[in-house]
Image (cartoon, rainbow, N blue to C red; front, side, top):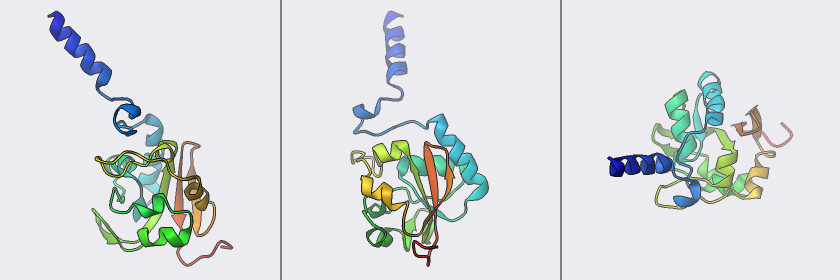
Length: 158
């Protein structure tokens, strides 16, 4: 009985391991992520650029199609020209298409989770700054998560 109790307590303590234990991966869905997912369910259509963790939340709670790990360059690109190749004609699980939205949250900035066998790498400051320029229009912001609509065909003056 003592051994079973110890195993139960050990499993409880490690059910969702801390990110530094699993290559900086955040294995849980935080309640603060759900505000954005519920908003997305009612306001977003089209493909969303999101890492694996966010894609899971968006698809599972909002039914929104996301990129998962099918495109990587936009997460680390310093400008729109370098990101564009990963935003156009993306072969996402829902089908091939152009990205319509970009999701960014504090956990994603701390470590973009793309493929389970790769460590989560922080998003460069230049990439986050890129979203305030070019053709990205912020349409949602909770302080924790932001959603940007890509205004294809617009320059920064739009």
